[in-house]
Length: 209
Image 1 (cartoon, rainbow, N blue to C red):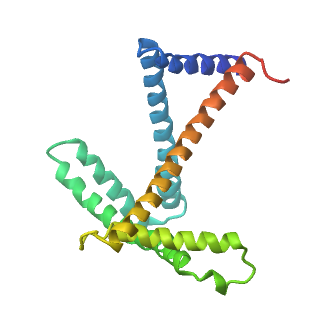
Image 2: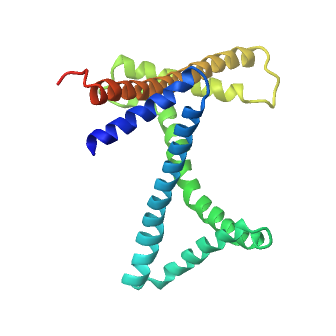
């Protein structure tokens, strides 16, 4: 069965690679199979982790009947599949959006805003044991943050010093976008290398034993 699974994986990988020549029925079959299997897998995972572990087990085995409220709200979302009962699902969606926003906004604000603001305004000379590179990094972060914020300051026309600082902000933005794009490309190349290793090592047995 292991050898059969390796052959199936290799043939499906080659079917996906056939798109490099042109779109064809073999590629579409592999694509649809991948989407269907992924959807079925995640459906089972979510049903097991949400319906069974977080609803059925606590309510039936532990007697936490208050959790039935969440189960009822989840069931109300299923009314969205019918046009006449679609309005019922809005109550559950509104409650979910409000509750999740109240939960996630403070944590996101603390993790992605306040923490970054604190790291930006920290004075490196007040922290002992830092190297020259730490001081340079702190200065670059401060300059980049201030210049980018000034670039997005649209209440005043960018002329003179504002225009010069805005250009510095654009430079930092382009560097950030380039680094993010490069990181994404490297991640895709890593996946490609993994598939080649699977084909050559696991399927064709051409790698080191």
